[in-house]
Length: 297
Ligand SMILES: C[S@@+](CC[C@H](N)C(=O)[O-])C[C@H]1O[C@@H](n2cnc3c(N)ncnc32)[C@H](O)[C@@H]1O
Image (cartoon, rainbow, N blue to C red; front, side):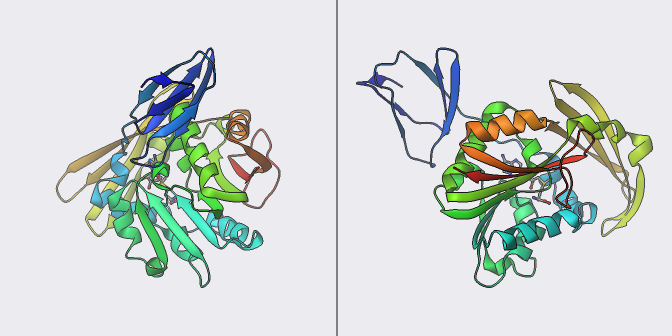
C-alpha cells in the first residue's frame, strides 16, 4: 500500500486508517480497491483481514435446528414489524437474519427484503420457511451488501453484540450507512450492561431437560469470564441418547448506551430513539434492553 500523490490504494477487506491519533475504519465492496484521497496529510495505514469466526450455535446443524425453539417469535418481532410499517419501508435489509423468522414475516407483497447472514446452516433453515421465496438471501456479512438504497436496515436478536471489537462494529455501521438511502433508518437492540444479564447465565439458573427431534437433551449455560465489556460463556448441549455433550463457546460485547450512541454518530447517523423495551418506553438505567432507531443523515 503506497501513498501516491495524495491518494492511497488498498486491496483488502477492511482498511484501517490512522492519522496521528485518529483511527478510522473503512469498508469496501468485495473485490474492489478503495481509493482514499489524503491531500498532503502525513499518514500511516494498515490493512487487516478480519476472519469471520462463527459460534458453534450457528454452525452445528443440530444446534441450528433448535434455534427457533430457544428463540421463538415474541414482542421483539412485533416491534420490528410495526416499525417497518410505520416507516413505510419497502426495501428492508435484515443483517444477521439467522433462521429468518422475522425476515420472512417482513416479506409481504410490495416489499423487497434482503436477509443476510454469514452462516450457511442458519440460512438453510431460513430458506425452508413459508415466505422464504420472497426474500433475497445473501450468505455473508455487511461487506457483501454494497449500495442498496434501502429504507430500513435491522439487526435483531442482539446481533449487535456479536461484533466484539470496535473495528468490526464501526465497519458494520459504516456499511449499513452506505447501504441505506438518504434518510433511511437503522434499528437494532443490544442488552443493557447495567442489567448484568450474564449473572444468570449459570447452570443453576439455566439448566433444562428438553425433548427434541434428536431425542431428550439436557442444556445449560456457564459463564466463563468477563474482560473489557466482553462476556465469554459456554453452552452445554447433552444428547442423552448418545451421551455426546456439544459445548458451544461464545463471546458477546456489552456496549453501554453512550458507546452505542457515539458509534452511531461517528458513522453518520442521527439517533432518533433509544427505547428501554419493546413497547417504545424510554430507556432507564435498569432497562434490560436498549432499542435504537437511527436515521441516515
Ligand atoms: C443471535 S442470532 C440472531 C438471528 C436473528 N436475527 C434473530 O433475531 O433470531 C445472531 C446471528 O448473527 C450472525 N452473525 C454472526 N457474525 C455475523 C457478522 N459478522 N455479520 C452478520 N451476522 C453475523 C450469526 O450467524 C447468527 O445468525
